Amino acid sequence: MVNDRANHIWVDNSRHRIPDHQAPRLLDEQTGWIRNERDVLTGFYSMYQPEVIAVEDSEYPYRMWFMGWAYNQLNEPAVLPDGSDYPGWPGGDAIFTARSRNLDDWEVYAKYSNGTGDPYWDTRQKTTDWVPVLTCQNTWYDDFHVGDPSIVYDGGLFYMAYSAMGTDKPNPEEEFPWSDNAACIMGAISTDGIHWKRSKEPLLIWENEYGFDETRYRDQYRGGYQRPSLMYEDNRWKIWYDFEAGPTNRVSIGYAENQGDFLSPDDWHRKTGDDTPLISHWVDFDVVRIGSIYYAYGDPFLATCGIHDPQLVDYDANWSRRQIVEAQSYDGIHWVTTGYFRPDRDCPANQIPQVFLDHDRQRVCLFYATQRGIRPDGSYDWRWSGFRYMTRDLSCYIVR
Image 1 (cartoon, rainbow, N blue to C red):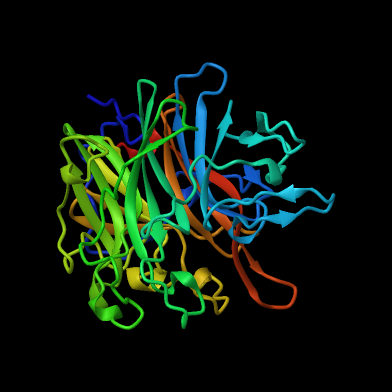
Image 2 (cartoon, rainbow, N blue to C red):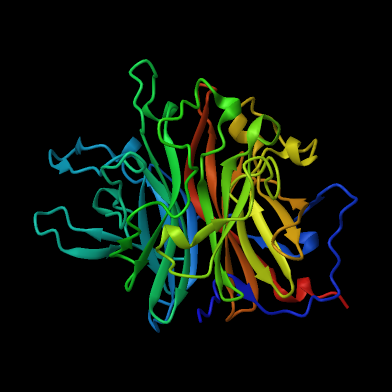
């Protein structure tokens, strides 16, 4: 049985009642959330989804996986300023890893570009040396994007659910290859967090995904399975994920379970229908259980959640209208949107939240990425510039 400390932490909050008839409240220092607005990892071109877990390592007890572009856009090969070659990586997005002694200072897995190719852990933000642990494969569902890692760790074994995308039916008339794509949830297992054995096929994928022209028939599309949140509980694997749930629901949250082999697609079963998501108009749903309550954090558009905060600046860019939002549930199935965060003072948006449950310090740590925002020419730069985290003490979850 998996001991999933990554997704569960104990606190006696059995008296807590989820509010269901009020607007989501502002979550800040008045509700126990403390943030220092300090980057714990930066220097990259654009990265997000900082998934952090504790491991059995006395020197480096924390590991992080994250994804995106290290040195340049799409991790393309390039000639560096010193004349040497940057190899680049297959596809576009890739998944990287880092380690830490204290959650505040991170070393990224890398390999020397001086000709030896020896692995090391980078502390200087030399992104040209950063080496991904998972890159794209040459398949119709996985040839230009891997990312959104969600990990359960147990007894020296890492279980990862992650997003994959591919150009299932390339259309030369489209400007971008991902305008008509396949999207799915993949699985992988590792003993060191660096070398991974992948599932042979997607764990979860819409049965009509291959060849479906979602650019032309968007309202009929029900695929787009992405951004998994993995948990082991009640002797079964659970995944919450994004998908297209029709013209009314748009991108929403689906749910699936597995009581068998983690890497076997045949053992995964969807519990939500094509048009019946758990919660509509939500993305990046990261789920943990704190005591008897499930909490999820994502970054949907605030207006779709009934959130209208006059203190938030609208930069006339869709990215700036997405901020971190909280939902709560008694059973992980029926959800209520309960709160939201304003962005850090020096950036227009905090996004792609991932929860780390700090058992040692009895607190909840919410990691997130910050967006660059307005450029000098007035345009909006949607890329992410750094990882940060805020904390809340477990005592804040007790209702007496």
